[in-house]
Image 1 (cartoon, rainbow over the protein chains, first blue to last red):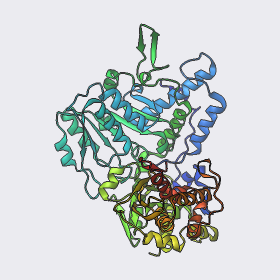
Image 2: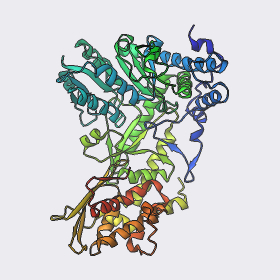
Image 3: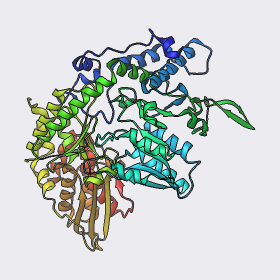
Image 4: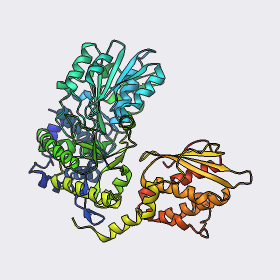
Length: 422
Length: 161
């Protein structure tokens, strides 16, 4: 029996999905006004809001169950450990990982990727080896690879994108050869919303024995993700983009690969025995979890996963897909609009520019009408370079957004045009 | 959708006509050949990137100033107003404007200097609408930090982060 099964009835706070309007009621942060306008929150690709099920679960832990995990014989330590490990079981089921050993807690996607770069790749890489990424990656799936290339003399290759913001798969395939020691690729682009056709990319890489790391930060909140079906070697994602807390994330790794990797950080909890003449490391996944972990973050993530499962990832994916199409269409109807990122297969995100209004000015004007969007380079400067723009305005959806949010976004652009006299 | 008078007023105050005019048609825009001092200002948050150039005579007078780069309306207008303001001034007096403007926009003295409240900001008062928009103060002060760096001969680009 898994820990989450043992905990059943105690931890189940997930609210059943009763349609988006009811779903909105579960997110207290949405129910406020900004500059006397009801908040329209369209910055979900940066960080999403949390439902009461998560907020209350974390508060309950702090109020009744807090202690360190894996250490004490006392009741609170036992409760904290049960909740912390129960959340790992929830995540394992959510992404269909083969075992709980394959689910490593990290601080977020960034740490997950750095862990793989330093622990899996760095010991193997020699000068002349290659790491392949794509042009649409977030900085956190670029810089860790640049660092490991500097450390080892390996070379970083970049697969190109086209004007729509799609990865040029033919060129990517032609870049895959026996010199490539890792393919690190987004599942969904944070700046453009492009969904990468991962299944065929991973199949191709594996046909050449090239391992694949997927940056899934922008995919997990928006679509069902099955790591065994994808057959990816590593899959990284963050709690705070999937209605969970900040400071917690996951690295999924195939057990046979994680087994071969040295620890990423040393400390407590990642050891079995420590003596001055040698230390024995703990089993998976604890080998990679040095120090007291983010216990409440993990518990909150577990609650977020249960909420998403109660709503249903298929339902979320279908709903958001329809809403994204509506948003892109409505934005495209605004005079002076330039949509950035028009891939055939997209999720959640629409970047855009309006007339020659700088995105930062647009962000301020929209904020004054209660509409929260992200403006700037979205930690994807190479994407901005590709389009020759300093930044974009980006509206990104979550399961709680609706058509009214989109209509408010579009209406607020009219005010921006008025102010700038366009 | 009903516009809220207060917030619209703040917005109009931020994007007042003088600011929009300087943003659309920046003065003294371009590289200054033969500049004696220059510095770059970067606002990584929104990608504003300006380079500012000065010709400073041996007696310390700024005989010419230009800037180039890209940024939001506030940062470009502020740089344009800066060049307009400081040409002909002693560099020490230009730095007084820097201190006065920064303390006026942030409500605190810059780098522990006492607020230069006696300085009449003149046209630079157009930037005061930024006070109601704390996230935009960095845009308004970017060029001024770069000027400070250029006059003090600091070689590293200044960043607002």
